[in-house]
Length: 402
Image (cartoon, rainbow, N blue to C red; front, side):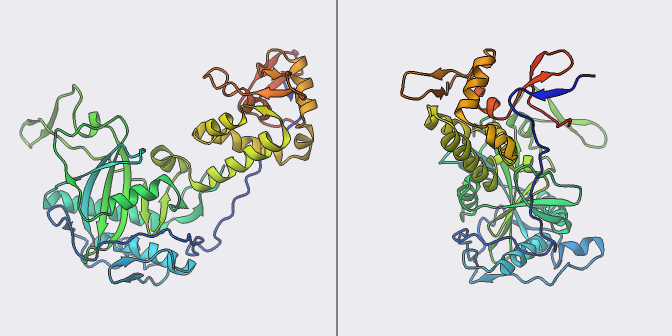
């Protein structure tokens, strides 16, 4: 059996420190300025139709149980009031929005260029029967969210069954997009609209007075959702298949729910795939970068390295792995320029250039696709040696065998 020891230092067992709400109804911390004005009157009535769930007062009521706590809608003159909410108001308002989905009015929107500063949003008109199905779908997703335990979307935390993650939308790419979604009107969808490879379908639920309750987001491919590929599409009429020349196929997996400045999701991947990492991941990745590359080591090209690391989700995840290593005092003690330079001198296969032209040697960041990961791999202790054979390996996934 081969055991593996680190070439630079031994490692610690990663321990994720995640704060949970002991009471699932307890509120998240408020985010100042997270709000937006909702329209005070019904809008897009041609595309917004009340569903079969009219009269329901609680999402949890669908399964025969009452709501976990009394809910009250925090509206004033048809406006979502978020920035001035207390934490208890925020949690109550989110649960009220989830509870109102079954009696809300549904609008379907399609979005392209959503990762740019100018997303394009199109209103997709639907008939009564289709709108009723959309309301039922929103009710199902809202029920799942309302009945789950809410945990903060903290770096490295994987929710268990029955748990959903939350993150504030303020100061994230989702904030501006959600504001655009909540505008009173949008350009109508036309079959001639050209979508890119990455797009969004949004189910918008509003109260009868036009106040926004919640939005449900999912990604879609035009080839699959709009039948723009080379496949033929037909539906079974009961007797025969009938050709569809301009279909719309909606996946039931709307996995990101946004209400009252909060995003709820069953997994972090559901959010990251659409909008990038949650705020907590960005903050901790930036702090780790400063700790490792700006305080402990001398790096030429550190500004370019920072931009690369904080604009790439996978590089941010690598920084979070480095953070766990830095929590081990032995690893932190080993992270000195002298120790790193000595390691590189005895391991020429580790291709991290060293610039010795200045008064002190400096590690060099090279932005090319084959070299840009080298410094992150070095600090994450990826270079291992087999105690049995003496072979040296590069391993991204590591477990302590002490």
